[in-house]
Image (cartoon, rainbow, N blue to C red; front, side, top):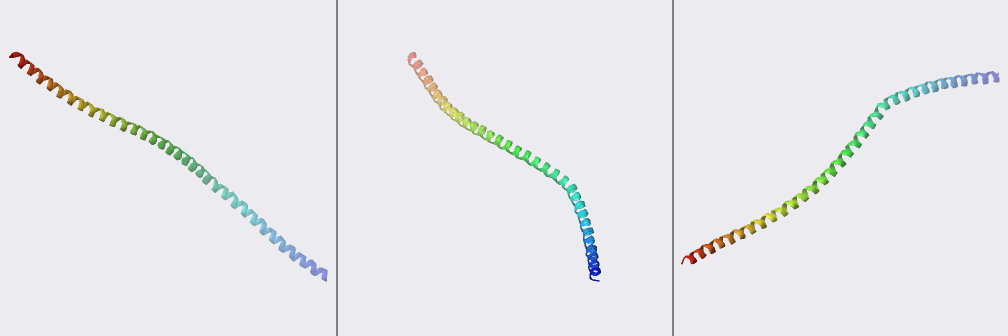
Length: 121
């Protein structure tokens, strides 16, 4: 009688174990299905991420190129400003010299006229 009860108890336990095993198999199948679905959904996201990274690298590269160009242009502008300033000073000096030359020419003309006047007498 005791053995019969033990056997009955074992059969109940075995039934529970089988039910648990079926639940585990179903859960495992569900996990596999979800994993496949997740992997399928992840592929386009990975592709988008890689495209985004490539675009970011290109953007950084373009920004660096533009910064170098701005730096070079800035140096060129500084040189041009210096040259323009030097040329302005040279022009100013030439105008002063021209003014002196014109004054000297007027003096010479006046002196020449005076000489002519004096030689006429």
